[in-house]
Image 1 (tube, rainbow, N blue to C red):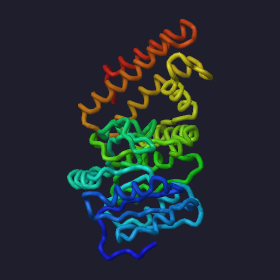
Image 2: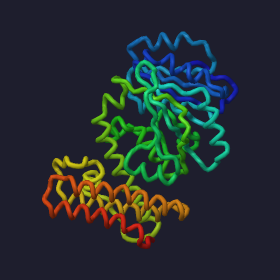
Image 3: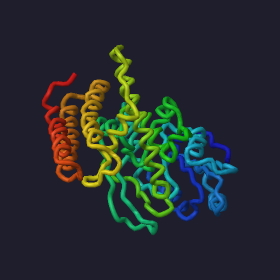
Image 4: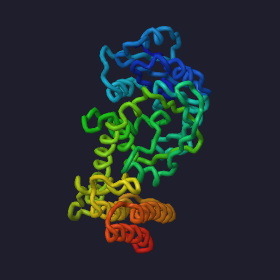
Length: 354
């Protein structure tokens, strides 16, 4: 690792890499060519066995800091080593196979400076294939209320598009290497930041997100699903715990059976229902309403935002339940019960909530 310069950069870009030589030059170039110039790029070579070391050795740029792991520690620990080295006020994340568009740092720094209450900002992304050809557009929810809600069930941020205040990372801790988080450690960290701070996604795409067969999200898709479910359960349990602390009453529990019922409803494709009962799906519909009630009580969102969010969420859940009721391969009575649960979910938006 080179000696640091005296001047402190405004942005520290953290880029872990493991055997990423194929795309690494383009990823680094996309940072070095940013219109915002006051940054350092911290590249963590996580025990690569390809020619990553030679590629990094060829750069003669004072803005690049190289950290070398003698063995592969995994993306969570490698990124943590990068976090330990950052000096900037803001930390930008960059994957070794993706490309940041030239204005990315400029746009995100300007946004965080003009929105001092926002701790983390991501963006939409353009999808590119392994040859760099753009083939799609990926947009996530943008507003704080929508992002906090989605975080309860999945990660609504593209990791490679994130810029976060360094203090926010320090406040919640770094990536957890807990086995139950598996390959979804980014979801765990971003959850902790999102549930304790104001966050935002920008509609403007600032990153080219490369999708290719060797990408971690594709190679370990099944493992990530299990890890995401563990983190989702932890996030919902944490939400319930916060309400318990606020009202100083009986503890509100979130059980493994609750999580199973919720996933049975949310993840079940219409018409294919292996391994779950109608009762579990109906319970899942009701749990959505329960989570909504707790969610709005824990966070002080503006009333118009709550009204809009409650109606849209209930409509999505109701529509899915009714579709299951019409198409599922269960008895007529079970299908009717699921449809009625969906209608009840929608009607719940017209009742008063605490």
